[in-house]
Length: 207
Length: 207
Image (tube, rainbow over all chains, first blue to last red; front, side, top):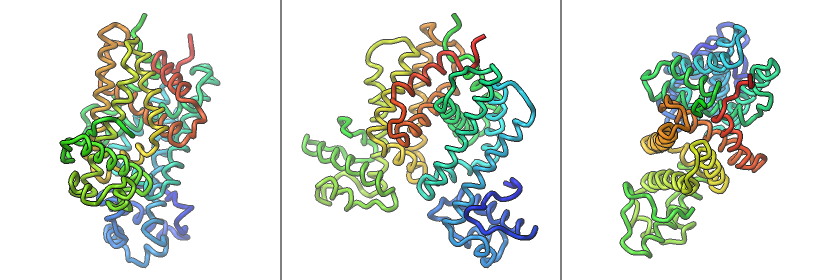
């Protein structure tokens, strides 16, 4: 999952060279596979360095422990989820179309990186602070978009944090069902169209 | 969490006497506290029996292992979530009011049993089959309600599984934010009214 500069500033020592940056990226990508396949408890530092093709010493240049790289990985993935949505939102569009584009991008991202669920979910137990931070910042980004849509007169003026959390929950569970478990039985665009339609007009019968 | 007869038929030996039933209930309630506070890996059988005030032998009358009581507990909690919703749905009501009542009941249940999130979430790692089963059966129950509402002409006729998963995700995340993390900063009725309103008419501005 190459998302550019590793977003691990809090927990990893920062590389000073391009080569160091690449090594850190390799370690985080290898950690995603190792933690995703084996889970935190079974995963090992030597498993990560073997997958990364780096020496054990390189690991300790950047991370103090298995916990430290796990924390860096959760923050890196949280950043990658944000970047995937941001790219989908680069073009200006009406607020409801923006929500649909963000969900489509998230569903595609989750289908390509199925390990993201397992790793962020395991953070609830291994690194609760990063887990909570992931959802609080994601919810805050959605709320910002809703308020922007309300300012433009496209969305209801009374939208608040609970609406953002409702939308985040929708997106997370649609991703779990259709991107992670679903093996593509419904395409991302179709799932996002259903969610977009729900946000546009609700589920009541037309009167 | 007394939800009546323990829903542990798959994994626990069934008690033949009322006294046995009470012992099994005590063990499951103690397991909810032990797993909820310590997590699966740190939790111990002796911790469970100490909290339950039962002898170690009683534990092995019903369960073979820590894994077995964890699985029984996840299924028991899944059943308890279902029972809480069902009680809220005892009275006939329009479909959208039923969804709001089900969410209000779930939020209250989650606020009273905050450990339910941690335990069901940890099942993703400890007992993935029960984890998946919990969400598949919950989603199927919501879809049944949506289809009933559609038959009565109260809800749109084109509702499908993805709508049910969207609603389940909304409910789970509103529970996480306001019942588990929120310490009651928004009352259950208020949160459920926001979600009900979103389902009734969406988030677009009135035209």
